[in-house]
Structures are given as structure tokens and as C-alpha cells.
Image (tube, rainbow, N blue to C red; front, side):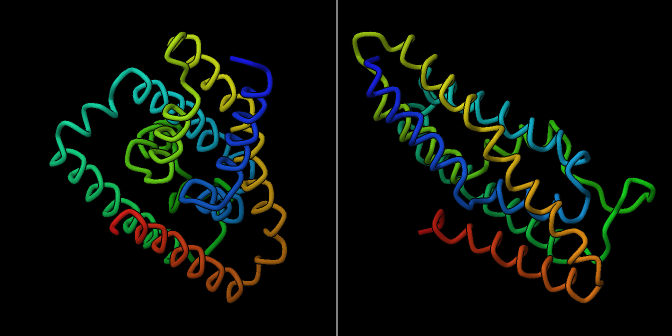
Length: 198
């Protein structure tokens, strides 16, 4: 892959990883509600789960979905339902947790890994990256470079969202502010379902 193509790929990976979407909105809310350290497994799970999804698409999962539209529809319905469930959980959260209560908890590493497989933005990112940047002359090397590009930018991007949420903790320590913040985050997360249903 020529250097200028890899640079374009890095820009694509950065822009798609830093812009709002289900992962980043949940990390923002998690940073506010649980703090940065307790959100780390969630962040790492996003990176690992997306890498698996990216490789799955590169090795032919996209062709399987095209060949079986019913499976693709089922994946969209499951993803939409799970996003709405997560939206409800975020919107109904009413108190910050510092790890000393048995109540709400941040998303675990494996939950975040699994979520990538029903995350509509992750699928669009993976399909587009593989379609645009895979070279027919060296498909395996291309897939490795695409994976490397996303691995380089993913953690810094998702960390910034969790970090921003953590920075808001003091301001949102007021229960009324926290309530309306979580409701707004829940509604925005629910709104990400709309594009995948069209």
C-alpha cells in the first residue's frame, strides 16, 4: 500500500473513530457515571471487538451477509433492540457510581467486544474500510494494514470520549444535572438506531 494511501486510511480511521456514534456516546456517559479507570475495560473491548469485526468482514463475512439478506435483517433488528435497551439503561441512571455499590456498573470488556457485532456504525466503518482500501493484488497485506491503522487510532479516540465524560463528573455531581445529562445521552443513543432502520 503506497504511503499516501495509508495516510488517507489513517485519516479515515481517525475521523470515523472520533465522531459521535453508539460507542462514543456510551463512553461519554460511562466516563461521567463511573469515571475513567472503571471505563477502561469498555474502551479496550471496543478496540478488540472492532478488530475482530474488521477481520471478519475482510475474510468474507460481508459476502455472507449479501448472500443471506434475512440474516442481515436479523442482525439489524437485534442491534436496534440492543441499542434501545442500552439507551434505556443510560437514560434511567440517576447516580454516579464509584465502585462501592452493588448497583449500576460500566460495560465489561466482553460486552463491549460483543456489542461491535450489532453496532451499525462499526459495520459501516468496517465495510467501507475493506471496500475502499483493500488491494486486489495483496488482499491479506491490505487487511493487516487496515487493521493496524484502526488499532493506532482507536484507543486514543475512544479514550478522549471517556476522558471528556470524566472531566464532566464534578459539574454533573448535582443529581438534577446528572439526570438530564443521562436522559439526553439515552435519547441520542436511541437516535442512532434510526439510520440503520432506513
